[in-house]
Image (cartoon, rainbow, N blue to C red; front, side):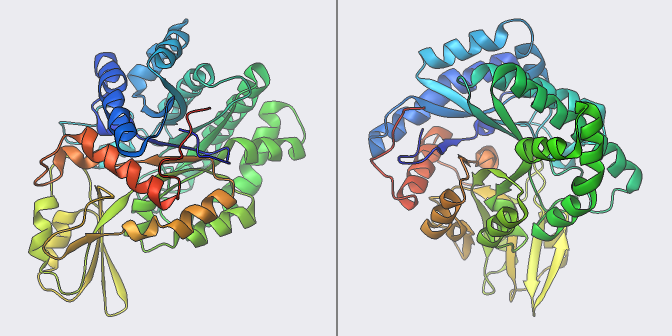
Length: 402
């Protein structure tokens, strides 16, 4: 959906639905998504066509990138009253009904399979975008762990340079500009504002630009333009909430440094205040997803790789908890549990739109393990989209024009 008086679009990420193989993908896109948008239209009066935030596994991206499969998929999207402008290129394989945990970060950006996957995603998105269109692909924050070693980073720099060179050539060939967006996440090489700026200063400013100039057979000035136009970041409000980052400051600093924020993933992290018994959080400890946890007490922040480890150590009340569990934005909380949804307020959206951020995507993929869920995911997602529209002050005024 196009946000009125802007070049920005709002959607939800379809990784909330299973989609690892082609049968699941078609069900997610052509069964579940229309139900979400029908509910949203009934609630708000929003009119189609509706943008779809697609998640394509490596298997599906490879299949759609061959022959005219992507063109046929685009035509079917249009017939269903939908279009695509952003892809989630983070989870490589199955993302539901099995143990995901730290495996979601594999392959990382030092592995050539991540580069091949991203190229396939770009080939597909270029076919889905309109003429002279702009698209984004969100991707993992380089690697899991904060100290991967110089050899991994050197390899990563080379792969990112190759990805940018591919996207630059794709724009020359098709007229579609695609921005690859690295997504900071807790306990990863890129996890907050400080680590993003350090990574760009150390690796993007010189090494990647030099490699890119060689790949594109051009000067460093042209290579720098290609880098700025095809590599940026995806700001996930859930991740920012977990690490106690200020999203507004993040947007300002990225703008100051000339680093594009291509997409904002809108969501809320699970939170608990100082008066809450930590045992109330145990229902959110599942065996599927990794729930990085931060516990703030007496001015110090304690880091835990998963909620289970935090619960093993933190036995008493008196601390502020932030848990990487995507709870619904419209969820009011229960028994002392709340969320970080206040980060997605009218002031932030106004700032983001003023900064020319063009893609906003509600992401609540954990509904399959959300304790006590009584509604279908379609109803929850539609209500979350309406919640965002209200804070964007566009409820009832959404336009379908691309």
